[in-house]
Length: 397
Image (cartoon, rainbow, N blue to C red):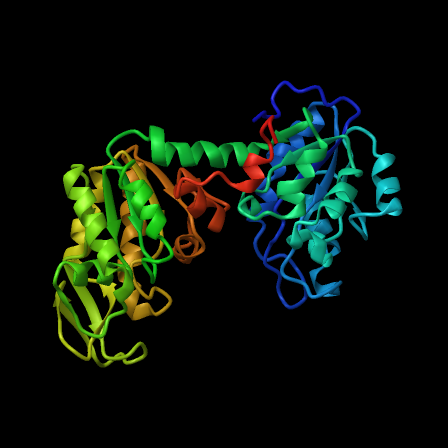
């Protein structure tokens, strides 16, 4: 794979697959510019190297050409963030689109219309990919968040750019961060995994237990492990079909000298919305009729000590039903511990929508070493997979 540094892009039209799938309000105004800001480095680099930029992206999941999901709605915001005018074209393929990009001068930027206005994009249609390739001379993938999909604009278009395809600055950084977590992180390396189900992170657990030193398991997925160890979990969420896997992971960890860190206590209730019925149980001693919905104070202290004794920490997934105020303390405590760890020099990496939402809920995420832009792409990478959009940039593809 090749990166943009030191490439000669003089007078080249560079197609950049960016991820501008940003949230919009009811008036189709951008409410979070994080993803736009994330691709600015690549755009600036292309311009510094003498090229012009043809930005292609999807937005939402449109059914046909929906006006509310037109990228035209965000072009003004993109212009402001890029610090220069951004042109817009109302299509992403065809003769008119090709004409619009053919007259670009070095330093100019044009944003093409939503790729997903065509079903061919998500179907991975080669003819559609070839049509997109006619928009420029060079291809750059900077959309890590969609690189796990075999879509035309990420996995197929690169076939038409032998020797002229590169990873953007954001994609490069994401791959470096994954390597930091799984291969070269300063030890001890800790992974914190939460969320509802073991099934969504089963392959990650098998892969990470070979790579990291410790794994904290919280959230709903912890109860499958607690039950696998013979504990009583009351009415808590668990996946019976994965009890054997949980036992196997615990065995692998023990035999390889790694540590699976589970909660010591649980905040439970008889109902998600019943504020009157809340009780703390020791892990493995939850009474029937009660469900675990957050970690307790003993677990918070245990997890805090584990975090502060690490040098590299990756966090993905909440510790409880953090959307409910009464069950958000565990997730909030992880944020506080990570902030303290970062202040002590620990490398803190956060990925996944719920974890990022928790950071935003506290009102400040600037202290984190790195926040991944990819959800599914990040998790699949940590499973040990080579993403289709990354594989497409290799010389033999």
